Structure formats: C-alpha cells, structure tokens
Image 1 (cartoon, rainbow, N blue to C red):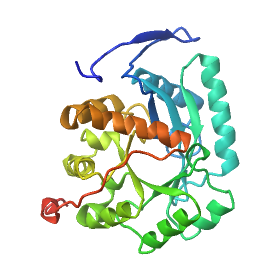
Image 2: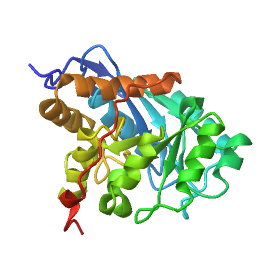
Image 3: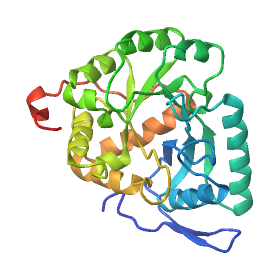
Length: 283
C-alpha cells in the first residue's frame, strides 16, 4: 500500500466542536515551508477566520507544521520583521485556543531586488524559521541579470537562497539552463504542489516534473493562499510523486522540509540539464 494512500489515521475534535480527519504518512511529519496563512498582510488569508479555514485544510492533509511566508517587496506588499514575528505568535495562540494541531513558523517570500543583501545583513528580512535558508522570488516573466551575483553575495553572507516556484517563471521555462546554472552553484529551489498536479496548466506541470527528474528542485510546498483557488494540494502532489518516482523521492522531499526548519544541510543530488527541445512550443 502506498504511504500516501491512507485516508484517515486519526480524528481530532477541535474546541469549536468540529471533527477533523488527520492524514499521517510515515515517520516524517509533513511540513509545509511556503504559505500565505498570516492574515491581513498580503494576498493570502485576509482575516483570522480565513487563517483558521486554511489551518483546518492543512491539518486534514496531514500537515503538522507550516511556515508563514508573506510576500515582501513584490510591488504590492511589504512585510516587516516585527509584523511577521508578532503575527506568527498571534496565530499560534489562536490555533491553540481553537484546538487546531498546527504549529506556525516564521518566514518571508522576498522578491529579488538590489537591497536584498543589505536588508539581510541588517536583520530586516526573515529567513525560514530564522535559519540559513532564505526564500527569493523572481518576477513571473523574467530573471534579473544581477541574480547570479546576488545569489553569490547571499551565500557569502552565510545564507542559502531558495528560489520559489521556478516552474512558473517564463524565462526559466524558455531557457532551462539558467536555473541549472544557479543550482550548480548551490542555490536551492522549491516547486509548488499545485504545479506538480497541473493546477497551473499542462506546460507548468511538465516543467515541474522535469525539475524533479533532473534533480533541480529540493522542496515541494503548497504556496497556499486560500482553501479554494490556491489550496494546499500537498496530499495529491506527494501521492503523484511517490507513484511516479518512488517512495524514496517522496520521503526525500519531506525530510528536506524538516532539515530546513532545523537549519541543517538538506539532501541534494547532482543536477542534470534539461534538453532545450523539450520546451519548444510551450508558450
């Protein structure tokens, strides 16, 4: 039987009286390292009620720990360290009050910009669970020319950049060697669960799987914004990954999420190139 095919491991009755079915998947706890569950700070959860709804859905999928990673400097939203730290504390208190078995950690989704390293050194940014791992986001259609130098500077400063959802970046899809070169230098990447299962379209799904096959991605996370159009999809993604690539690959992604939260080195394999001809006609 698949380690991801167990529908219900146990049920938990919340303080509100709601009963939630919790899925367990083996020895490693499910950790979601990318979410927009913090209320009222970006385009994710808008109210505490939204956050509770997202938390309930996360618990139903077997997620026990989640990192709140609100947008920062993306042209629409700016989030400060104090805003995130205090918001995470309030959310944890709320979930405890509601009897929701979900731990929230702090993080931030930082759009790449020229001040990133300076802000990082000044303690203005929030690495994932205050470890050496830092989320970096590209614009959806391009990769800045200074990205290579920026990643080098981040690493010199003692941090490891993690590129979020590269499978949804137009330039990376059209020129896959760009990401390959980043990964070769020690940069990590995180693919969105919804991309793996085709929620963003067939072309993005195809590239997401090519990144898995070529060892160019290291984490699978939800990037959940709500419980409808941008839901978690973690169960579906991990079920598909195990079926297509085997149990070891699925476990590796789960273990990497845990290792990240602990600030430890993750599992990674030598990346391989993706042949350009497989990308013709994507857009």
